[in-house]
Length: 125
Image (cartoon, rainbow, N blue to C red; front, side, top):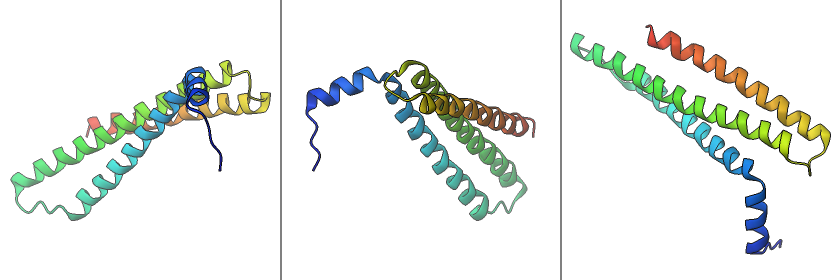
């Protein structure tokens, strides 16, 4: 069994501040995935039978899609920021890992642009 002292854990956690941002970004992405499933369930099982309910149905879908995109955008921005900062500042990593982290941050920013385009399309719908 591996045991880590509290002091060693606190020192590691305080030195690697980009890890806190990384964990937060992963949590936001998980919330975004849960919201995607909630949106899919709402679209599948909601039945707008009257014309008045249909407008509410569309408004609810737009709201769910906007919140989903918001969590995904925040998660991707924080992921890009944490991997970029980790790639630049952490001297204990090998050069290949640092290059990979910077590449991952650029892929996350590309994902942010793609999700942003979906938000713009939904807002004009």
